[in-house]
Length: 180
Image (cartoon, rainbow, N blue to C red):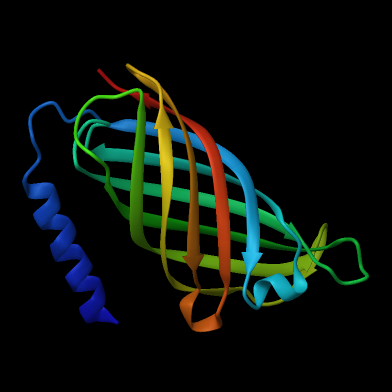
């Protein structure tokens, strides 16, 4: 496990060492649906999530980017108890790949590694011990607009906490604001 983390850290360091002139950091905020998959889908319904992200490297016209994001989501249980729910939250670091050049619509792919926690319980109190651990994820998206403000729509598959088989699909609609 430590070897994997060291490998990811080295790759991110190499990516970050070649920062080109004109890199503008961006903040993003979004929300949407969180769709349980795999075993998670057997006991939970589709819910909602919110996400905030920071992209310190890679402008919307560069080939590579680095993004850090935080996600919080909530789903309701399929059990007869209507107050039962699950919540998932975590932090993720992703590498973004997109075609070069400035355009109004930019497709992109992203993949990353994160740490997520899932709790199952009742709204208003009482819960089982949290399930947490490393997670891997990846997906695709589209970014729309020109200039400092852009909209984005993306879908990812996040598998984690990996050792517990929790898989979910956040579908996010949001906005991005560039500095400078």
